[in-house]
Length: 225
Image 1 (cartoon, rainbow, N blue to C red):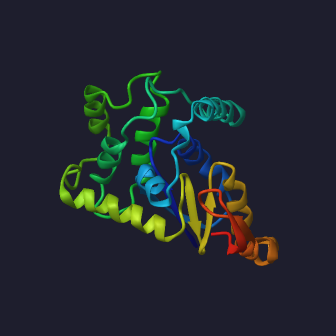
Image 2 (cartoon, rainbow, N blue to C red; image 1 turned 60 degrees about the vertical axis):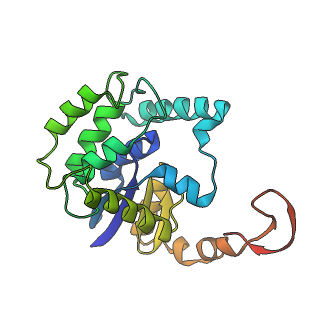
């Protein structure tokens, strides 16, 4: 049985869409999935990325694209009243239900759907969060406590160490698959397609870059990270 780490942050519409589609993608395959909440903003800070929603045109595109993907794949999705928002309340609620860094699919589904099938409501309204907490399995630790906070930091650090730079991200058999569109690659890899053992996969990170992170021209001696 293949183990898959599914790294998620509830604030991401793409993470929600990938979560909903994952059972279809894994149908007929022998897999176990660990759903691991992480802080998307911390990934951006670590990698020096500008959050895409800070660019007005890209922000609009993300929402249109997510809504289109939903209707194209038959996944109900509605935008919350405000986005982006602070996802920490949802992440901590999730980790309050477990003693380790993985949450159940039921917990992830309940939170994702409260946000992305919430009829346009405010995802972090205190009354709404309180109602959501009542629909989750009983807490086994304080979501606001240091243990849960430390677990969230550890989950995020683990994701970074695995090469994760955004969500959704699936890590299986040492390979990283990012984004909603990456789910088809994940299925192909799990089915043992030979392409993943060839140069198209293994040589991609050896390609030379001629600019640095700031867009300045270099000597061309640095491989793509």
